Image 1 (cartoon, rainbow, N blue to C red):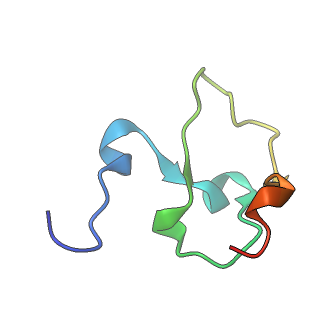
Image 2: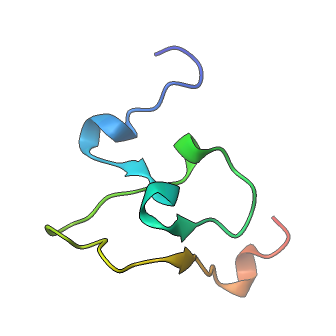
Length: 58
């Protein structure tokens, strides 16, 4: 696979930003993706993801 190419879209993942979900740190859209597990599962979902404190400063 060429460097930078992601398999996630092949499995139904899409960039989180398209659904109003933001990463708390700067990453490329193709590196922060989501997938609804049920139809409409991402409807009315928005905001920044909050990670546990153990991830602070990584």
